[in-house]
Amino acid sequence: MRKWYSLRDKVYQMENLRKAFQAVKANKGAPGMDGETIEAFEAELSENLQKLHEELKTGTYQPQPVRRTYIEKEDKSLRPLGIPAVRDRVAQQALKNVLEPIFNPDFHPSSYGYRPGKSCQHAIAKAERFMNKYGLSYVADMDLSKCFGAPG
Image (tube, one colour):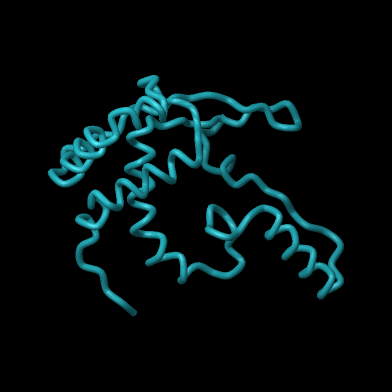
């Protein structure tokens, strides 16, 4: 097993932050609590990335509060969604750029959540193959997030 001693400096490298911004821009997305759009962040990209670089490097980076919104599901219930500020999405993506190549290879092949090259459609296809192979009739669909909420 490979050991990693310091990854922090890899996260705040300017090239990684630029790459992270490009991924955030490609994802589009709404502004966070601060109201700053991706276009506004990009208009002062060098300054914004330099500031983020310094904050991450010195340990003074503080994420902003997340803007809460709700998306209506098929059953008319609401799914909460948190929208971070653009700069926080860049910081998160920069961290993902460093950690994902290290940890992703160790995930179980049947793990589909938030994984590169995997999707809901892939998970459904795998469940279907499994059902056909073993002659099964049912698939359980669960929202585990409801198991961790406050008692109500």
